Image (cartoon, rainbow, N blue to C red; front, side, top):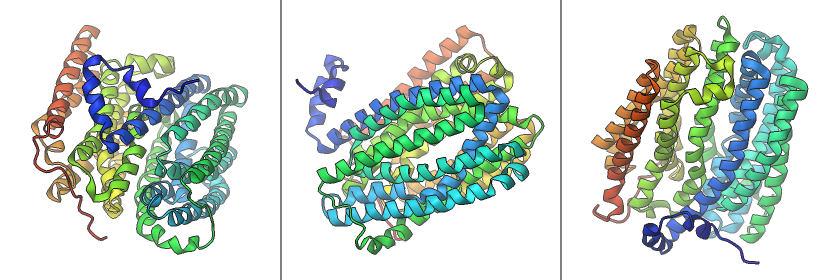
Length: 518
């Protein structure tokens, strides 16, 4: 029985005229590794995320707007604590396993063992903390004392999630993207009936227990896969002398945790501010529903994140300009590709979520969240540059500015409900980007015209125009024209941004990224 490879499967989908380009890419080891990693990331993620999206929509319709808002608050609370529980170990493991799996397999094994120990310790401490604080959090911060028991179930989710983060990071460091895809596929297939069944049988409590069960299954599959990959790479998994690698935690994990502290807790704070407003949980339900499609729009970039981070870490300063441009533009292209149809046709998510979400408030919130998503996709490549070169203190400073603007804006804007909170998120990401992009360019961390140019400005202008189009409730025929025009303008702009680097007209073949000491 013959085995069909990722290249054979993807090549069958290409038009013949792309054959020469595909053949050329085979001669580049990095291009082949990136194409293979992306293919398998996409295969697993598309099905698993698609099933999760479908399950989320079904659960939202079952629970209703207010209870679904409570479910969103539970997940937001878990996300707040998971930053501390994970201790940046997934990112740390990806970078260092990719760097040492061949050159120093013993050290890679020690780092893997250390990541296991620290994940269990920090995850356990944070889970116990959430369990103990659940009555106070429910009664005094999120204005829902009846959620105490569900928050305590979330403590179990928190612990298992911390273990999963470290394991997935190690698998990505091994470039085991096919394995990750298979695990994600199995988890997606299993999680759909569990999540829907839990919500149907026991409402909010059942949905939360179902989330814990899904994470536990994910941990088991990850554990088995990781041991198999370690044997294949001949990396010894031993806890002996793993304490020698503690310096990795202080140099890499600590700034990653500090940067993450600006995300989960700040998001939770904003959600809590909204929940404490009149009809707060109904508004939070609207905002949570909009975030479901944000996750969909970002999923394409996340498929690329682990392959690109692993390869950038592995090649270090030998990174070519083509790889740098691919890293910067790839996530943004995928984010814009998903955002354009969502901005032009907001009826799609409204009908999927049901009559409770068919309001003007949802339309405005949704448009702002989708635009915010394109900014996040734009910044994803920049974040990979920092991580691959150990410049995570920059990431921490970036997140501090983002958090300050977000919380400051949310305090004043949540009075307008979900649309007000969405405005705060847009303001935070836009200000943060405007402040930091010049720093990337002045220090030559990325190729010049990929950030500031006429073509990148045109793409932003198109996206802003589509947001305003959503506000004025244009007839469908005008939105169809806007959709076609937007695809054409953005497509041509992205081609012009990439062409100089892929046509070989730019000087030099290697771009050294500055790795200034922190």
